[in-house]
Every structure is written in C-alpha cells, then in structure tokens.
Image (cartoon, rainbow, N blue to C red; front, top):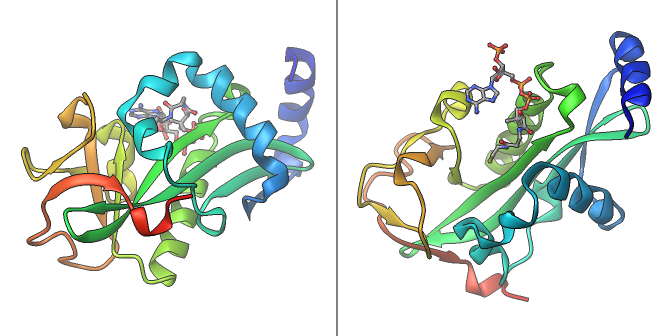
Length: 182
Ligand SMILES: CC(C)(COP(=O)(O)OP(=O)(O)OC[C@H]1O[C@@H](n2cnc3c(N)ncnc32)[C@H](O)[C@@H]1OP(=O)(O)O)[C@@H](O)C(=O)NCCC(=O)NCCS
C-alpha cells in the first residue's frame, strides 16, 4: 500500500471497524507479501521457520485483520510438540506499519488464544518480546525446559498456559507435530 492510500485509510479508520477472520487459502499471497515487507528474506533462517518447513499452520487457528477490504494484519499458529506434549507455535504476528499501535496486534492475539482454548489446546509458544506478549499472558520459558531446533535467544522463548498448570512438568525439544506433517 502506498503512503497516500495509507493516509486515506487512517483518516477514515475511526469510522471503519476492525474485523478479525479465520485465514483462508485465498489470503496466502497477501500474507506472504506482508511477511516479506516486515521480516525480509532473513526470516527463512529463523529457528521458528525450521518448524514451519514440515507442517502447515492451522487455517482455523490463524487469523487475518481487515479494515474494510484491506488486510492489515495476520497471525498464524502451527501444531508442535514439546517433548511428548502438544502445543501451538504462534507466529508470525504482523501488522501493516501504518496501522500499528491501534490494537490490531492485540485483537489478533486475543482471538488466536481464545479460539485455541475453545478448541482444546492447552499451551502456546512463541519467540518474541516478553514486554509485548506478557500483556496477553505469555511468560518466559524457564531456561533449559524447552529447546528449539536451531539457534534462538532463549530469553525470547515464551509460553502461555491456556489452562492453569498446563506447562507444569512439560519439557523437551520443540518439534513439528509430525502427526500433522504434509
Ligand atoms: C509487534 C506488532 C505485531 C504489534 O502490533 P500492533 O497492532 O502495533 O500492536 P497493538 O496496537 O496491539 O499494541 C501496541 C502497543 O504494544 C507496544 N509494542 C509494540 N511492539 C512492542 C515490542 N516489541 N515490545 C514491547 N512493546 C511493544 C507498542 O509500543 C504499543 O504500546 P502502547 O499500547 O502502550 O502504546 C507490530 O508492531 C509488528 O507487526 N511489528 C513487526 C513484526 C514483529 O515484530 N512481529 C512480532 C515478532 S513475532
């Protein structure tokens, strides 16, 4: 989106409500472009992408944010395991730059966590800034409890319990959920 178009949308944004929808196959290209603009080609070497190589994200637990017909944000969730325990890996979470700081990211996160809980998931992991994600219940994974399949800054490995105590006794390597491999 060019700057003029963004200004135009921002000017009218207070009149247009934000809609959060489950991702569909038709959204793939627009989301890919958003990821490319946000993270660049370096994203493919991140450890989280190593998990995404083998298993598709769950469309019904991945969400898009829309203002009118404009896609302004996306969040995805992927099935993984921590040791023998099932979990979701949340990310990437991305909001179009002109629309940041207006609650779009939070709305996407809240919907992703709510629907995950309703579908019986108990744990969600991510790699990100605790200062941001603690607002929706994520905490740092205690050192050594879970390992990613590649280099990662472990102070950024976070977990949210969707059910109280769900992370108690859970430990081990984080792997794709092979039962859902493509
Ligand atoms: C991170 C991101 C998704 C937040 O989306 P957003 O729609 O701007 O988020 P919200 O409007 O819900 O929240 C904005 C608040 O979070 C704060 N915030 C944003 N990123 C933050 C971070 N990395 N650490 C701490 N606080 C952060 C903002 O300062 C703002 O604070 P305020 O409410 O006190 O003013 C968005 O900035 C983005 O796409 N960034 C680039 C991609 C990225 O870093 N994704 C996360 C990696 S997994």
